[in-house]
Length: 180
Image (cartoon, rainbow, N blue to C red; front, side):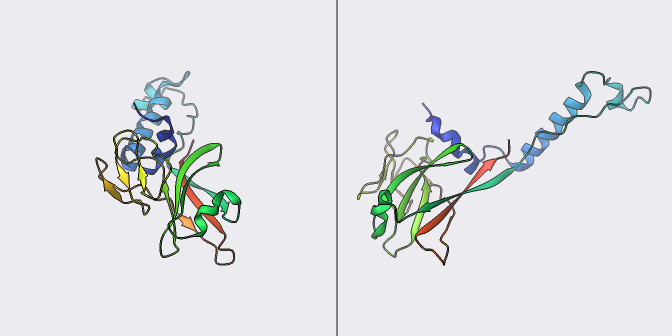
């Protein structure tokens, strides 16, 4: 059974190519233009006697980026103050929930990954000192997101992070959302 939280991260790994999506959107727009009430099919076939009407705009396509800022000085982020510290967090942006793993690497760098297993789309368990485990099929990931044991073949999906030089206690997470 697929985890319903996978829906929030489908935009990170689109199931169809952009070219296929745009082609289908164009076909949809032509279909709508030809089937709108008051518009005969003659308008789509070049019949000059048909009265054209304005067609509706095509559905939006593509993606946009939303950002969430986290203040790492808050108590719930205390685990990230030392190397090897990690935690799972759910953030909300534009009304959508994004579950992520935040992990402080031994070199001090902060990495952020999607909490969705790359094998079957299940939500992984919160991180421990031993790493991150998926409860569905047993995949294990290291705290750097890399696969430790399968069946997952790909690492956890990274989430882009910006750390402002003027305030290193704040991090900005960036998520791609489909245009609706």
